[in-house]
Amino acid sequence: MMEWEMIRERLDGLLASGRHGELRGALRMINEVDIAQYMEEMDREKLLLIFRVLPKDISADVFSYMSTEQQQVLIESIGDHEIRTLIDDMFLDDAVDFLEELPAGVVRRVLRNTNAETRELINQYLQYPESSAGSIMTIEYMEFHAGDTVEKAMEKIRQEGLDKETIYTLYILDQGRHLMGTLALRKMILAEKDAVLSEMMDPNPISVCTTDDQEEVADLARRYDLMAIPVVDKENRMVGIITADDLMDVIEEENTEDFEKMAALTPSADEYLKTSPFRLALNRVPWLLIMAAIAIFTGMIIDSYEGLLKNASIVLTSCIPMLMNTGGNCGSQASTLIIRGIALGEIAFKDIFKAVWKELRVGAMVGVVLFGFTFLLVYFIYHATLDVALVVALALYCTVLIAKSLGCILPLCAKKVGFDPALMASPLITTIVDATSLTIYFAIATAILQIAPV
Image (cartoon, rainbow, N blue to C red; front, side, top):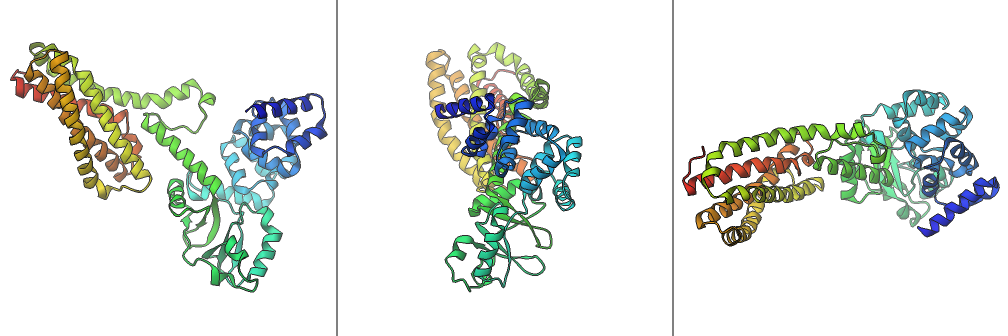
């Protein structure tokens, strides 16, 4: 951290003194990501100056790491020729990524300053469904014909490799551009120069379709430890690849979305500090309204047992928060593990009975401990009668079992009907368990204490 502050001060000094030649040399020694971070808080004038000082061979890479806001400022500030050069130097998937976030007027200007072939490719990318494999793929990959030799392939890599996003995996196609197999660069380098690629390739490559969901693509790459995954159309024709850096972005995006849903928030792709208070409020209100509506039923349950609470020990009322909190926590524990299992492909809907049976056994063991603890707590600390202590402890035991079961069932059912399982995490499941636990609580109290509810 201290080293970066020193570097920043050095860059600021060179910029302020107008020593642009030295500034260019200093920037060349810094990683592109760090340069983009350095430019993040700059005003339009300094941003444009730094970008024009940047060595041409890294300016496109730096641009791809800049925030959308800074990219827009820069595009609006530079000339048409500079836009054309920038787009030509960028990898196509990076160009598509930033165009997706820009206003329509800015996008039209960028497309107007690209050549016809690039413009056609960008428009094709922009037409793929959002969050699909086609929308995040790149066409910069190394492709070969089945009959090519190692010597011919190596010569092609030397000529074209610098313009490709990755060369670690080679893709073998037939004359109709159908994907026949893949070949690791390491394996080819170690082979004889007259060896034929089709004899060394993996004839059963893992691939995805352009319309596949990006979350499924990331899961597939994780499962098979792929650095890149080929993308084909419905006729199995090769159209692109998705590289590891894009897969990591997808994983981060999907994880963030799940966290937001688990916290009862509408997912948002914008950064927190750059999101308006109105948008943040809008993301939160719908779920709060839903949970408030569910909570009304909890109040109605308490109200319907008003007579029981008046005639029984005050301990029954005092223990309601403890009962609801414990039930909600138990449900959240189970749902968190189930949602994680679903995300990793370890649990499917067909496993619902296995999962419920496992959680029932876990709940029984946890419940026994909580039963004993609660019974002693209510009897000795609250000085309640034995029957009241039994009511609270027994209700808690039953609540734990029900909460654990719901924590399994609800996420799996949500997945089955096409909803995101994360929707069934805390605090939504807590709200549902609250109403269930109170119903159990008062039913047990009515039966044991033999007091009418009203």
